Length: 383
Ligand code: MG
Image 1: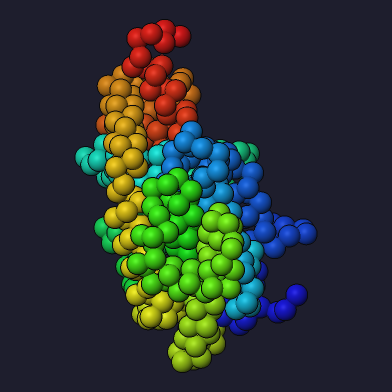
Image 2 (image 1 turned 180 degrees about the vertical axis):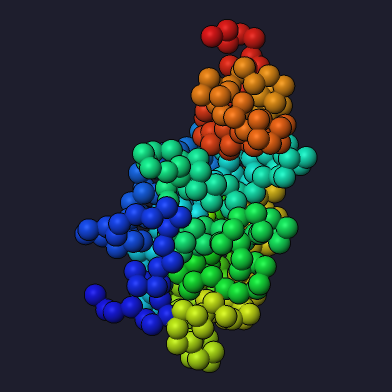
């Protein structure tokens, strides 16, 4: 294995964990973080949470779990090329969506609306809450007691007014410094993963067409090359070949641009990274423009497609009705959650109750939320 770049995160520069633990005997600090994520219950539940298509719509579409694995794959590739810490990048990638609600962004929007009077709901903050508080599996502490570097990577974005409430990992949003390069690269690997797999899933679902996509330069460039080289290629295989090249194209651009930035900004240490006013890991200007136009296409033609919108609308109803039901009658919650409500109510009043209810609803999988909705509201399900 090649040695790490001097500006990479490493065991030596690790800022440690909230609760002191002896160093792992055979693993690095970040390997231990990664293993804790993989064993967590929130990570397992990603299997049954929507990325764009609701879980029951088909077995071929991405879920939050397969999305996270794709982000981890892309992140590891980039980290390795740049001699950054591959284990840390993988950890952040696997953990980045553990706070997501059921039903993708529709679920997040609905829960945020429900929480409007109680400090809101934001999935990045929730991911941090999952690893800091909600996972309860160790004797010595709540949460997973991850390293600072893994936690700072999880909190990709944060509103200024919330930053002060999350302690050390919120500081960079207040003093406008940067996260590690590993955190920066996962943020963009996430975008590479979802833009490209949403093209693939959208085509498979028949919601968007190749004809439409050919108006997007990024897609059309790769498509034209493939069709010229392999005019007889069956359509599904053609789509795979194009998306494969799209991912590669974006990864190469990101690596080249970032290498250039590291030289131009004269980055020698992790401190140099943190002191920058802007992220160092970036796409070229040209690529950023092209990615933006792909995103705009996906927003208009896929995420706002009437079939996706119809499902999102239903999902929002499920989330807000569940939230209201639990707020109006906490006895509808399983006993252990009722206890947590009492505990939080003592400290924070109604806000505390709302936080526990939102934790409970956010933690649900799509199918659990649908079943629970039936159990609470459907009179024919008297169980
Ligand atoms: Mg993601």
